[in-house]
Length: 194
Length: 434
Image (cartoon, rainbow over all chains, first blue to last red; front, top):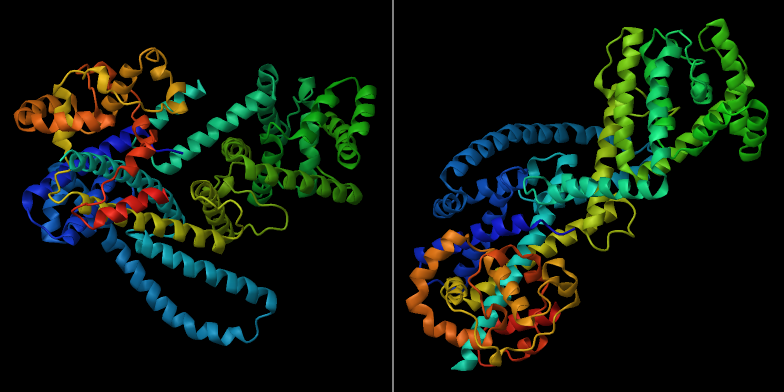
C-alpha cells in the first residue's frame, strides 16, 4: 500500500526547510558532511511527519537532539512548540524503560545458572522448541537494534513500530529518489547546454 | 459508504500504519462479504444473531421464551448442543466464560454454515427438515437434531441444561471441535470477523454476568478451546502471541518476498534484511544527493522560478510517451484532448508538493530576477518542469503521478560523461539498477 499523499507532502516540506537551514549554516562542506546532514534532516523530517505518534520517531528525535549542533536543526524542522512537546514525551519514556532493562539483565544473570542445570534432562521435543525460541529471540534482538528506540520496546510494540518504520522508510526513499532524479536532470541539462 | 470511509482514512496522516492496514483489510472483507451474500439475507442473519444472543440469555436464566420465536428454535438448540459437553454451572465463573468462548465463535460467524443450516432447516416443517438435514450432514447435524428435540422437552419442563448421555457428549465434543477448527481457519483469513466476534463475546459476557451476578475480568474475549489452559497467565500469553502473529501478517504483506516463508525466525530474517536494505538505500540516496549538489541548495528556487513564465511555444515541445496509468487517471481524462495541458498539470503537481501557494508567490517575486536566464536554459531541456501555467486550480492534481511518472529512458542516456563529481557516476548506475 502506498503512503497517503499528505504524508509525503509533509515530509518533503519539512525536509526542504531542514536542508535550507543546512545550506545557510555552512557553505563549504565535504561530501561526507553534506551527506550526513542530508540524511539527518531527512530522518528528522520523516520522524516529525509522524507527529510523535510512534516510538521510533520519538527515539530518533531524542537521539538527534543529544548533539548540540543537530539540536538546532531538529528544532527548526519541528517548530519550537512541537519540539518542546516531543521532548517532554521522549524524556519520560526512556528513563522509565531503562530501569526495566537493568532488571532484565539481573534476571538473566540469575537465571543463567538454573538453565544450565535443567538442560541435561530436556527431552528432544522441548529442546527443539527451545532452539526455535532462541533463534527468534536472537533475530528480535537484531531487529531491536535496527529500529530506532527498539531497545525499549516489547515484542508486540516492536512489530508494530517496525511496520510503521518500514512504511515511512519507503516514503522517504520514494521522495529522496525523485528529488535526486530531478536535481540530476536539471544538472545534466545545464552541463549539456554549456 | 465503505469506499468513502476508506478514502477518508487514507488521507489522514495521523493514523498509524497498522490502523490503515486494518482499515483496508476491513474494507476488502466487507466488499467480499457483499459479493458473496445477498443483502437481505445478510440482514436476516444479523437479526438472527442479535436475536439469538438475547434469546440465549433468556434460556440460561431459565425463562423459555425461545419457543415464541420459531425461527430461532433451531439456532438455540444447536447452541445448546454445543453447550452440552461443557456442563455449565451457572454459579461458577469458569463454566460461563468457557461456554461463551465456545459458543461465540460458532455463532458470531455469518459464514459458519453448519450451525446456520441447522437453524434454518429446524424452523421448517419437522419431517422435511429432518430429511434435508440428514442428507446434508451426517454426525453433527444428527446430534444437533437430537439435542433440538431434547431442548424442546427441557423448555417445557423449564429446567437447566443437563446432558446425561455420555455417548452424545462425545459426539457433541466432536461437533464443537470440528466447528472450532473451521472457525480458526476462517480466523486466519478475516480478522474483521474476529473483531466482531470479540464484540459479540463482550456483549454476551455482559449479559451473562448480569445473569450470574458476577463481575468478569477483561480476559473474556480470549477463546480457550477445550483442553487449553484457562489460568490468567497462559491466557495473557495467548493474547500476546495472537497479537504478534496478527502484526506479523501485516508485515508479511508489507515486506516483499515474505509470503512464502513460514515460521517466525525466517520471517524476522526477511524483515531484518528488508529494513537494512531500506536504511542502506536512504544512506545511498543521501550520498547521491550530496554528490549531485555541491552547495546543498537543491535548485528548488529554480523549480519555482519557472512558474513565472507562461507556457512556452509548443514548437520545442518534446514528445513524452504518456504512460497508460496517466491516461486512466480521471484527473487527466478531461484534459486528454490537449497533450500540452496534460503536461502542465503533471509539472504543476510535481511542484505543488513543496511549498504552499502563499509561500510560492513570495518566492516567485524574490527569485525571479536572479533566475531568469537559468530558467530559459532549463525550460528548453528539462521537460518535466516545462510550460507551467500560473493557474492554481490544477495544483490539486494527483501528486502521485509525479512519482509514478517514469523518467524517460533517453534522458538517462544523455547523462553527460564529464561530470564534475565522482558520485554522479554511481548515480547513473543506480538508475540502471532501478
